[in-house]
Length: 478
Ligand code: F0G
Image 1: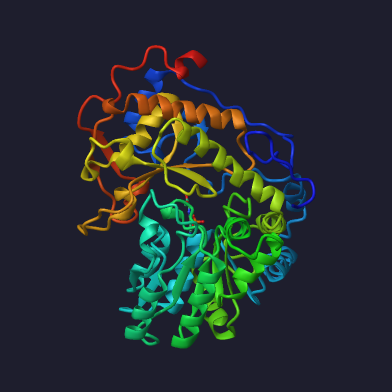
Image 2: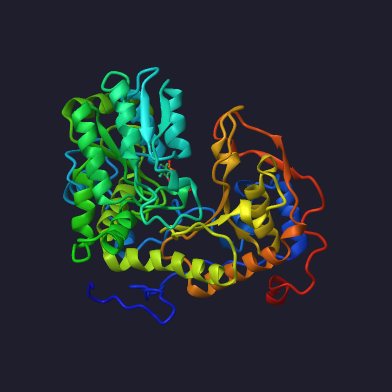
């Protein structure tokens, strides 16, 4: 146990902070929410945030800054080149993760873009656990072939496997034996596998991946976006690590890889920022040649000096077990309320979010009619709770068939909402669950060429969540 950490009787870690600045939020009436939803084409990405009461769209860039981060921002050195803030950031990354070369980018996908440009040749494979939307699209735009080598449990929302983020080592070995090293660009391992429900890998599995990549001579790159949470799950679930420090485990994970991409908008508590960090000198040089084309000078990579200061401080906070334990326990709390009420969610509960299983929540809606999209829209209409589709809209490319996970993500921004907010969210989910037969399927009326989930538009195939509930909890609150 680390100093200063305590759980309350509902199992939530008491936040190791108190609130100094607040931002007002308000619940609009049902007819306004319905209008907002129609204007947004039933896509929660297209809602205005002022029309949202509890915003669980994403944990990306939505965390609360600490007073130390805000204070550090005052020290931002906005020099174009040689910025003091860059060197502070470089030192924080080296101390925490150990990588020698640090290239800041405007956000995670900036790092993914550069990595794909330098490492992926047309036709080369990128074996990975499941996929992440932007990670995959950059590999594909570079001509690479995304190759899923996750364990089968990753796509089973009811499997209680404690490490659903693991790679299937036998499958990876088959791919590498057939194609490595020439036809494999790199192996990618994502910490707390987002699309599977925020599921960790075990340290033992990562060691196995390291051995295979070394034997077959291909680089191992981490998507370390949610490395702190993955480290906490290793501490709590994997035998032999209970007495490790979080910082020690984070470093142990990072040491196993040749480099990492980070979207710092998650575990590093900043509104904007990303990193590409590697050990190899040649690789770093090639990335620096490209960063000036796409992001900016290597000493800022699309970030302001004050952004790099906030990020350097955020990296230190991301190794504080009390802080990480608090937000992970918030997901567990919300999940516990939903499980008590028989609502189908992905288990084990992930770190950054609770994922509703839309296939079981709306069994009357076939997957081609976008049940997760419809469920996300219904949660908004019922109580102005904004969530995100993580199913066929996010997963399917072109005309490829897709019968994978169909989830709605209730993502918990770090250090932002209280237990009262989360209890309200549980009530709204329960309200929709009780009226689930009133949620029809959708048809897609606009489909963008890339990453369609961001901007696609939909129409319901039948009246949507009607008649409205007269005395819903949302109405009572009003
Ligand atoms: N990798 C992972 C695992 C991510 O979750 C994200 C972003 C990225 C890379 C890309 O980083 O957004 O900074 O460009 N995930 C966000 C989300 C968008 O809502 O899960 P980015």
